[in-house]
Amino acid sequence: MAHKFVATKIIKELQHSLENLEIDIEKYEELRQENIRLKRELDDKTILYNTMEQEMTLQRDELTNMSKVSMIQSINKQLEEKISYIKILEHQLDKFRAKKPIEAPVVEPTEVSTLVSTIATSLFDPEEFEEINGYELLVYKKNYYLRDLETDELYSIQSNKPNKVVGLINNKGKVKLQ
Image (cartoon, rainbow, N blue to C red; front, side, top):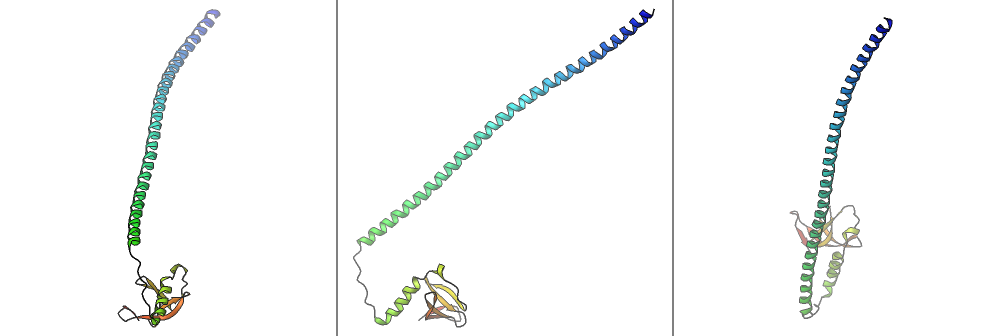
């Protein structure tokens, strides 16, 4: 009887182990199916990612090509403008060459000093000008003058300094040259 009791106990333990093994097999099968499903999902997402990456590369290349075309169009436009400007200058040069030489005007000695100061003023380079206390740099009819801030007198410029009085600014702010 002891053998029968032990055998019954072993059979019950084997049945219990078999039930646990069947449960573990069912869990394994569920996990395997879940793993297969996740692998398919991963494969699908990998394919989608690769497709999107290829599309992005194509769009990036297209944008680069469009930028190149835009730059070329801009450069062509600039080139056309320069060619047009050159044609205008050539036309002006042809007109200038076709003109007869002009005789130099006779200048009176009293006008020479005024002419010299005007030439000196027109050759003035404002980039090299250093400010002087009490004076303001003024441009009038494409010429540079120094204005005395106290008296409103206009001076010609020589060596970046006031030279001779050449005019005045009246109380209405108008320039009167002498």
